[in-house]
Length: 365
Image 1: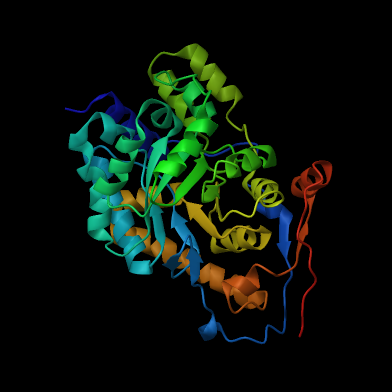
Image 2: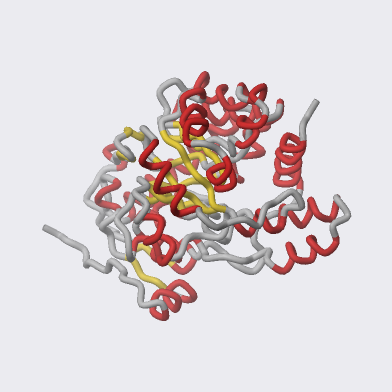
């Protein structure tokens, strides 16, 4: 029997795989970011090195499978396929929200399956801020241990919570709880948004709690207001559906969120939200991110097989390598130092907000 959380998880899988849930009038902003082409790269394609370190863990490529699901039979299959692909490629994975584990221990296997299929991969457990506010630090530490996770991610999703008919409007006390959780946790603590991005003001507040990394999850990719629009229509919640439609494209575009965060803090950063290609990954890294995360492009493949997930990730990896050659970058560290040009909304936003932007010139020595 599937409980209410399980039904919601299944709703999310079904809607995201069958409906148009991406942003409509806003983009992640990468079309406004231009990398400088080098017709004399002076490097060989075979020598490209994608390896990076993130929170002390080795990644074979700067890619993270962002949080998706867990808690149901369908989610078990999805997590197994995602994890197997992550393990094969030597990249990271963030599990879906572990709220269901805290309420229904029988659902834990749908999350543990990830470690069983990726023994050496970086895997982060994941909880929402509501669990942070309502569960003890001991319970959250135990969740990390049970799932054999390398880190804990706390997701902040106020818009999503306000639009869910099961959601909560209680947000006070998050910063203090994060600060205390970090003191009680023995693994890295990551904080992410869920489709609306992180501004510089919040990046500074979050950094002050002692957390170890941030994930933008900016606007321009999956719209969780859009997902809840469909759920509210199906539930007969017409007023909530109208609210969801109004806020469908709410948030800070991903490219801009990267600039917002990196203009004020030096924390490791995962760029996510509308990442759809290896070129998007390259642009995110040049803007200041350390990894790029993606979810929706992997959902349908993960429903099919782990080989289907692998195919998408390999394509993204190859696109990233091409972008590196074409910018004369043999390593990710070199790529992150390459010049770029901003246009359109991204440039206007950066100027208006007076964001501190890296603009070093190409070094030939």
